[in-house]
Amino acid sequence: MLIKSLVVGPLQVNCFIIADEKTMESMVIDPGDEPDRIIDVIKGNGLKVKYIICTHAHFDHVGGITELKDATDAQIVIHKEEGELYKRAMDQAAFWGYELEPLPEPDMFVKEGDKIEIGHLSFEVFHSPGHSPGGICLYGEGVVFTGDTLFAGSVGRTDSYGGDINKLKKSFLRLMSLPPDTKVFCGHGPASNISREKTSNFFMGEI
Image (cartoon, rainbow, N blue to C red; front, side, top):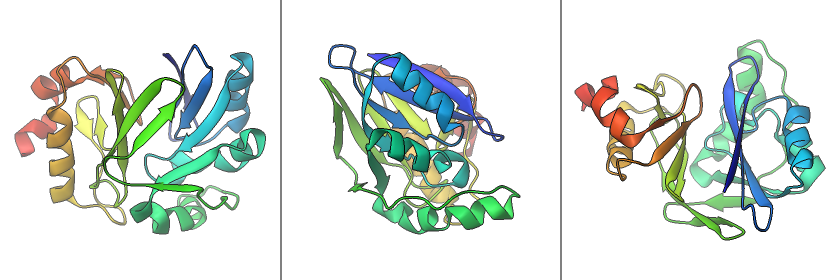
């Protein structure tokens, strides 16, 4: 498995490019900005992008989708409960003083338990509301991509539209039930693992 990460945009979002090294089929998670950089990595590694995954639809995680879709014709994937936020992405960006071009319609809605497959790799969709209504995590191959549900030592905020602290607690506990050596790739900040988060994440004391 190939995992490439880029920190993109003014809010420093982690964009991940994951590929099966045998088939070179790949997916891009949270292309929040700087699509040219993302496309350069895709082309430089000879990857064929099958999916563009939004862990959630806050503007800083979806800002590069339009150009990436044009360049790859990959399927845009979100959870259905994130549809309203996705439609409002331009307004979100404007509120924060940024410009965002209109986004293409999603190609595919996922739900709890669905599988995302690229080549011989398979990832299970966890519906992880709390930071937003339709947030998702992707778990498989010994790793989990958590978006803004879980950070190293912290969690996503719940004071934006659709945030819910009680739902976030449930999502957090579910992630803590994963195998201890599961590597955690977060929406912002450094990577971690479940064992470390169970002993050092401040949110453990909030449950």
